[in-house]
Length: 145
Image (cartoon, rainbow, N blue to C red; front, side, top):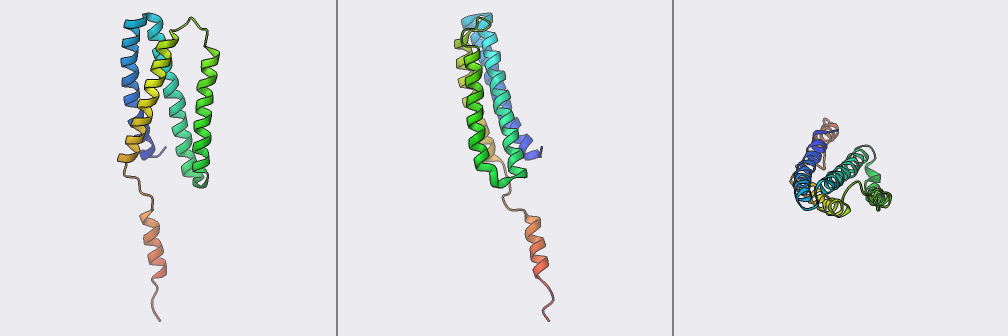
């Protein structure tokens, strides 16, 4: 993983974890222990799905840039489907409070997206490799004879 990718991941993970911690505290007060468990599971699910998605997307951008847009669309579809499968599997559970889980899932997802967007906008990522421009200039600048 390149340093830009790691920095972008870190800029998304930290606010999401902070939001998850607040959600756990609020859920514990409002819904008790099951609410806290639901908030922890919601936060963990967002971190897992969105983090894995970011890593896969950055890897695709580095190795196959021509597939980047298609991979992004496919990735977001797969992320929604994974969360939907998780919701269907645990819709009648008594292990955790489903309302606390749902609100935490929604809140942490929105924070992740906002933090990832802000991190990407603040990143100074070059879209042109300056070394290749210098090499091309040196290659074409021969002796005029």
